[in-house]
Amino acid sequence: MNILIKQIMLGEKPKDILIENGVFSKISDNTDIVCDKTIDGHGKAVFPAFYNGHTHAAMTLLRGYGEDLKLFDWLNKVWKQEAKLTEEDIYNGTRLAILEMIKSGTVFFADMYWHHSAVIRAVKEMKIRANVGITFMDSLSKKALRENIDFVKNFKSESNPLIQLGICPHAIYTCGSSMYTDCFELAEQYGLKLHTHLAETKSEFDSSLRNNGCSPVAYLDSLGVLSENTIAAHCVHLTDNDAEILAEKGVTIIHNPCSNMKLASGIFNYGLTKKKGCTIALGTDGVSSNNNLSMIEEMKFASLLAKVSTLDSLSLPVEEAIKWGTVNVAKAFGLNAGEIKEGMLADCIILDLSNERLIPNHNLKSNMVFSADSSCIDTVICNGEILMENGHVDNEEEITEIASRYEIP
Ligand SMILES: [Zn+2]
Image (cartoon, rainbow, N blue to C red):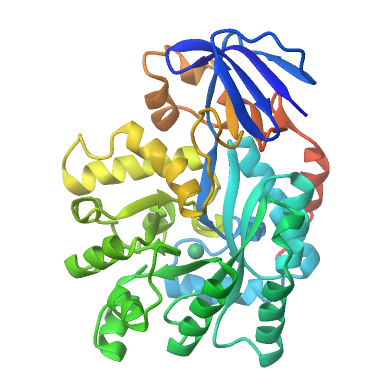
């Protein structure tokens, strides 16, 4: 399918944008080509789509469950319920998550969960991009561990270019050193990203000092598992040396401001990570610690938190916050995406400039970080395919109806 978007605002000027074979093939003042689909861009603006660098999609089913708890109390409560989720539950919960993500302009998510076949089924059906994380913990049975490894070995990435696998040792408090090094080798062998929770809470930091004699980051570095293929979610509790290690090894930090604040995990040290040159991108974390999957909200919270934590209103300007929610996540997962430029993957959102939250339009980037919500998004395009048009996603009524039947057992 090829698409021509006519006279849509791109930055300061109206442009014609031609999408062919899943990429932005031509961006010009005027293009007259007959396409399968032509979109009238008058009164609209095109904007990069969002990329969610860390989540647990099927946790949408636990939205609002386990409120006002500290991370480990919350984890214990949530894990008990997660153990009861069936493969079908996870399929339905993931579909609900993808629906919510598409409606809020997100076209990619990095997932870390169970029943990856059910996640992949939902991702394929809804035509979104995903890094489907295969989760590893020491508590897995030998059989489950074997199945995980076999799944990675037998996965044919060329069968669906929108889906990549990720190797996810869960965290240093659920995985020992050999689990981390085995996961690292597996990721290296198959050219996959290693995605883990890291330095999320003070108690994780303190117990690493006690058990390993060093911080969580220094510990993983000592195991040799930090590289430019490592995606580290949270990184709230960092020493100066930790931030230097993360920058030097090229690790991408996925900052989850809403989750970190909601679970009172701590305040992400923007000043330190910026000073040391760390690569930072954004994720929502799972719904039960957020409680939604809006990357627009995540950009806003990241920006506000950066300003208040440094007591500097110049911290994290909107251009940078947008990069954290778009191109930085895309780059971390090896996607040539996140910006609207010729030759890049054709992922974008079309904004309705008549939406009250975008009026007046003195500064669209600022409006998108600080004012917008999902209602501003009219159309979502992923890989040159329309996932949402006029605010509607295929099968959305069925997806919400099935998910609304889920009850906590
Ligand atoms: Zn998480």
